[in-house]
Every structure is written in C-alpha cells, then in structure tokens.
Image (cartoon, rainbow, N blue to C red; front, side, top):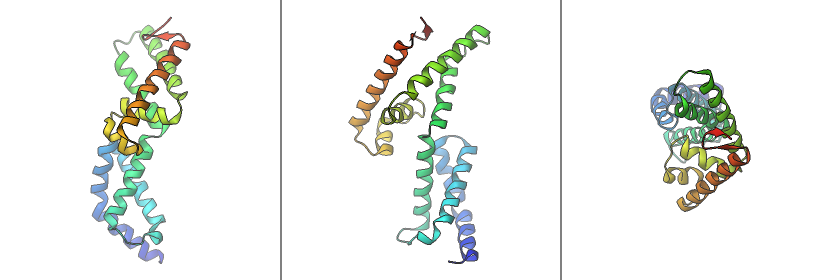
Length: 177
C-alpha cells in the first residue's frame, strides 16, 4: 500500500471515528487530555499496522479494539496507578495545610506506595483497579480475563499482603508507631 493511500485512509478514519474514540477512551480514563493521547496512539498504531489489517472486521471495530487495548494498558501501567494512589491518599488526609499534616501525608504516601510496589503483579493489578481506578469486580474480571471469584480472591490476598507489609514497616492505622 502506498503512502498517499495510507494517509487518505488514516485521514478518513480520523474524521469518521475520532470523536467516538475520544468518548470511548474518556469513559475508561476520565481525563480528556489522557483520552486525546490514547486516541492519537490508536491512530498511530492503525497507521503502522494498516497493511496487516485484513478487513475481516470493520475499521470501526478494529479501531475500537486498539483503543480499548491502549486504555487497558494505560490503566494497568504503574505510572497511572501510582498517581491514583497518591491522589486518593491526599484526598483522605487533606484536613489542613499544617506542615505536620503534610509531612504525615508524604510519609503515608511513601509507605503505601512501597507496600503496593512489593506485591506480585497479579495482586497489584487487581488491587489498583479496584481501589484506585474504581472498577467493579466484574469489570476487572473482564479486563484481566479471569473468573470473578479469582479476582475476589486476589483482591483479598492483595489487601492482606499490603496490611502485613505496612505492619512490618511499623505503619499501623495511619500513624507511624
């Protein structure tokens, strides 16, 4: 396929599906800027793989699958989940601007992030998707392609492991002991 033909197909796909993909990505990430980046990544991937597209499915379906995969990859990335953890923790602790409270918040951030980082990936993903990305158990099961009961078990074990790690580090009930 020649470059001009690829460019025309890409331009047409962007015109027809761009807004739909943006809305789709936003429903996953709840951030317009990130959604725009994910849509851009989707179109880049489409352009790169255009010759491999066998047209067994509609272009719309193909683009949606790429976009959903990009959203899943973003939501399970440690960069995203670390930001979510810190934002969530700050919301819980933000009771004032006193330096003492800020210091406790930073220390709590460090303890929590450290405890979650130590989890095996299969537990970390479930914990972060449930608590910080606010997915339901059913949604997580679909996302990670596991039975819902397996997701429940992994979530329970992840919570237990984080609790043990926090106790080992001397951090209990939100205060350094």
